[in-house]
Amino acid sequence: MKPTGTFILNIKEKAQNGERHTYVIDLILEMRKQGWLWTEEFMWHKKNCYPGKWPNRFRDAWERLLQFNKSRKFHMFQEAVMVPMGDWANTRLRNLSETDKQRDNSKVGSGFGKNVSNWIGKDKVYPTNVLYLSTECNNKNHIAVFPEALLIQSQEYINRTRYSKGSY
Image 1 (cartoon, rainbow, N blue to C red):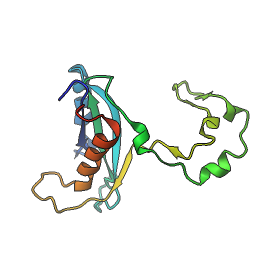
Image 2 (image 1 turned 90 degrees about the horizontal axis):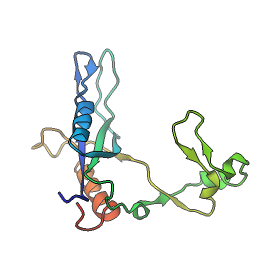
Image 3 (image 1 turned 180 degrees about the vertical axis):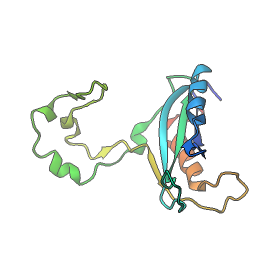
């Protein structure tokens, strides 16, 4: 992999002895110790997750997609994957308060903040980091049955939208 490259790992904590195992957390920490940057976490929302009944947890309807990079300077083209803002903006942006017209920092000190007036005149926004895909069972030669669309969509997302050609 090139220094400006990236990889995305699809992984889920297993349940063991009535609790979730910590190997994903351990992996993230170990990757960081080895110089990898944990730059993003996507979620695969399984639209048709398997039914089940456990005494102390619910159905698994999501899995992690962890993005790691070796460099903070990787090529990212967010504008190529922007999505329509939605009809809610027509009503929400019509009557802004004074707070909406300036950066309003989170009251809990998280560093997050927003200036709602920045959305005026825009018709597209960045997508969320959630992929909504159904499970499938036609790739039975793989130990973990995931939808081929997850692989295709992730690869397409990387190739077409986030990283310049030849950077991964």
